[in-house]
Image 1 (spheres, rainbow, N blue to C red):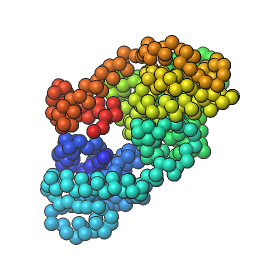
Image 2 (cartoon, rainbow, N blue to C red):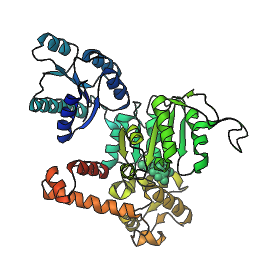
Image 3 (cartoon, helix red, strand yellow):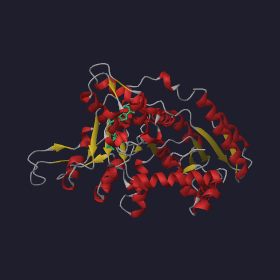
Image 4 (tube, rainbow, N blue to C red):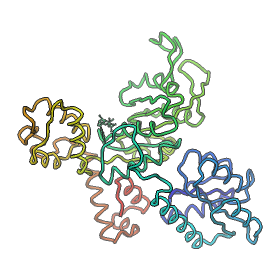
Length: 440
Ligand SMILES: Nc1ncnc2c1ncn2[C@@H]1O[C@H](COP(=O)(O)OP(=O)(O)OP(=O)(O)O)[C@@H](O)[C@H]1O
């Protein structure tokens, strides 16, 4: 659960933040009402813990505005000791609970757990998210496996909002498909979906590609051109392979996101841009941040919500379903897999993920005579079930995941102990578990 702490006293903020993070919550903080509303607009906050009396705005005014944008947000208001009339008022105005200063941390934790449970029950009873089957998807995204269903439920949550989402996954897993789905299910579905593959643009053309240029801004700029940011107005800008963005442009991108304005190369004039930004990467951006090759502030801005698209080898159940889907898409006549050939396919680790499977089926349907694909029709690598390719980073990630699970199991999922045994902090352990999609 993501909690936003709003308090104009820094010591109080830091104390609450430290305590809640230790309990495993994700926490954001704001030093006043205005800042809180700004953060609330761009992050999937589920619970607000707010001091009632702040300099710039009263807590109940902040809450009222938040509720206007997101009626289901939960709130605990913190009031001065013995101020019963305010406590009554904040409850009447719709806070879920209140606490008096000084805050009793154990009592706070109990209140938060109660709210968390309430949210869970509502979610399960379908009050918050409709049952997944009831929603008709605007494009086909195949996968009944558990990891894909979990991904879909996150997509449903993020799509109707304006939150930035970072889509993380290996090559060919379907990151672009996920971005398109979020766009098509969101409020900007009638606007454009503009894609920029940051790995495919030469560095010297980046800025003009993204922000546009004026005529004569540089050699070869024969006429004025609008950048992709401008072209995405009213819609979604999808930055694929965002880890490839050079540092200098990262700063410009951050500015454009913060100020919602861009200027074309060769012009001082600022143009308002209004685009939702979705990003994707197969790199470990957090690692890039610690190495200094990706800006931390930009990372936080883009990574409001991280969606991990699992590799195909982690959801082998989907292989059969995807195969049938691609056969239907590419085969002109009725064609199917023999039992052994299908078994072989399901065993193969697919380093190129869904894209590799799609290409494989496309090739097979044109090569195979008759109506059945047998083992001997499969390429050597699939027949032998070997992962001939594969990146070092992928292999390392697999080994890391195995070690994490082993340590957690050994210590009955007590995270402090598992982290100790691995020689990492609990925070790093939680981050790594999240990234690898490990849940008890
Ligand atoms: N779940 C799915 N259902 C149907 N088709 C899928 C699914 N996942 C991926 N595909 C198809 O596989 C191909 C590769 O997907 P996509 O381009 O979205 O992957 P990607 O992760 O963005 O790849 P890259 O990292 O190389 O940019 C596309 O043709 C896409 O339509």
